[in-house]
Length: 117
Image (cartoon, rainbow, N blue to C red):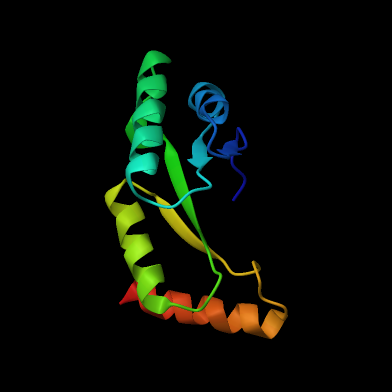
């Protein structure tokens, strides 16, 4: 379906990106792991959204999980942690250190099984 206006998402973890996302964007894609540093960045994001009169509940948070080694327990834990922090989407970024398309597809299928359970 066509969305108007087109959603604008910002990626990165610098304070400048977060402030830009809060002012102009529809969502933020942090490039970091869940935990205390992410919580601090999310506090800044919420503060900036409030400052600009924006509704936090209508703002998207898409967490990216990078894969260095296939560790399904780590994926499940990180996905759960991001969910607790309010992520509206969690995705696996399998291209990092994976050399073949077949390996990437197999990893994505496994990720889907792990986080869906």
